[in-house]
Amino acid sequence: MSLTAGPVLSAADVSVELGGLPVLRGITVAVQAGQAVALLGGNGSGKSTLVRALLGLVPIQRGSVELFGQPLGSFRRWSAIGYVPQQSTASLSGAKVKEVVASGRLAHRRPFVPPRAADRAAVTDALESVGLSDRASDRLSVLSGGQQQRVLIARALAGQPELLILDEPTAGVDLAHQSALAEVLSGLIHAGTAVVVVLHEVGALAPLIDRAVALREGRVAYDGPLGALAQTGQRAGHEHHPDVVVPGWLDGAVER
Image (cartoon, rainbow, N blue to C red; front, side, top):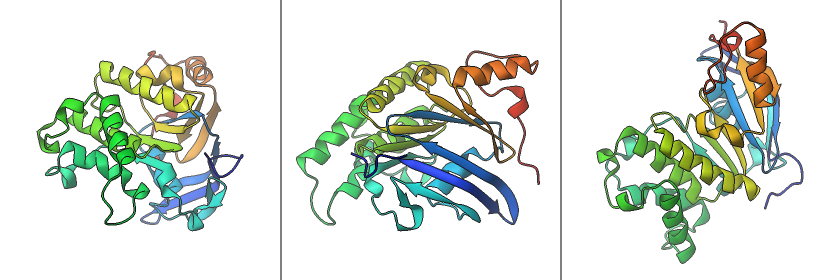
């Protein structure tokens, strides 16, 4: 359970510079337990930088972040958070699938203590949830790109997080497995897990999304229902494909 009745994640006036150039400009956003929030925007709008800033992976020049009611700088309960970055498995290519997924339990275990039954069960359940139980003993390097992405998702799920952040989790994943992921996320959300997912095409995840937060040039351009965002794009005179939720007026990189 969460440590606070308030937001599991909140950011106030967050600004980030990378290489002396502004990337995020005064972002304010909050996510509640059991809520699914899609983070949208064109390439270079700051989506990935925002999730990394929320997790303390890039420094913040101005503003504040709280996780489960605690300031980011003093937060220590990282076992409550699962993070799936954009696919990057080069450093894991020699590992077996089950080893990668089991690493998602490390925050729950005491150092040098063998995994408990609960740890093993969490790994088994996570592999089943992404449809890779039969590949548990394979090396990650022999899997396709989409399968490797599913392994990274399973690693996050194995930690049984209260807040799950996924950066483009459907990239390179076929529609059938997007639907399977949607089913897994639906169960987590129903159980109270907060989900923040960076997306360009919503696809099979659309029914799960409670709220869309769209970025443009490092600022929040929209925060509200997903359907209303699509309607806004249509009113602006842009064609809209049902699987693409970023209207044309959100396209474009951060102004330098």
